[in-house]
Image 1 (tube, rainbow, N blue to C red):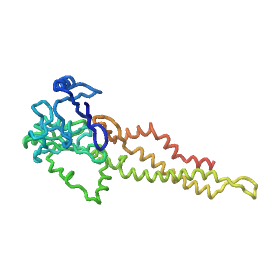
Image 2: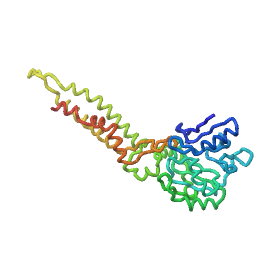
Image 3: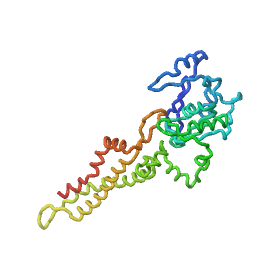
Image 4: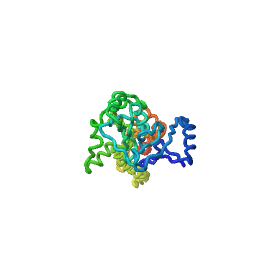
Length: 322
């Protein structure tokens, strides 16, 4: 019976699962046959052993006898307590790194008791940092010396003592500031990268973009209401017995419509500077927030630029002034 593990927040696969066999022989045969098997361009890791209980996290515990299985406790089946002093902080992680990948990365430096990547509660996406617990302080020092600055998936990770970064998880904001903090932190994948270019690139889920979209919606509704009024400009000139136009109404509509066009023009600028989600690596089924201005512009030019440009052109004003 197959069972793929999904993220509770996003509903997407976390990149691993479990398969229950009828006999031990079938388990051993499946392990020998499929461990290292390439599927959709990725090499599978297949190990035998009981899965963790529902109460435990899906980070793997201590390996049992070198077979790669899960070992929840020292024999009682309860959760294992870990010494927090033997923990290291791992920062600047790529979004593709999950608990299993983090443990695999650090197990070369010692006996990994627990590896945990911190995820955003709302989006289910990685926050870009995590913690690894070792069995001894010597292994902690070895991991810091060996892994700090290592390039993982194109990013240089930071490995330090967790006490330096304790404020990140142990000082939650007050209830009044919580909503504002969440809107500022956002649900971006590369939060550290985003902060470096925060002034030039907009987050698609950021408060600034949401507020602008509300303004633009009002401007679009005004534009829809204004355009039909241009057809009320013609009027009958009784003195000269001919058709004429209401000049005051024409000027009023032209001014209002031109102001609305400024919103359309600024909307094009915003679209050129707004990041987007792109499924690039697909390791966990989560999209990557693209921050490259060239890629953002290229994508916008191919998709919605032409329509937005036509909407921004002062066609109604020009039509009735010619």
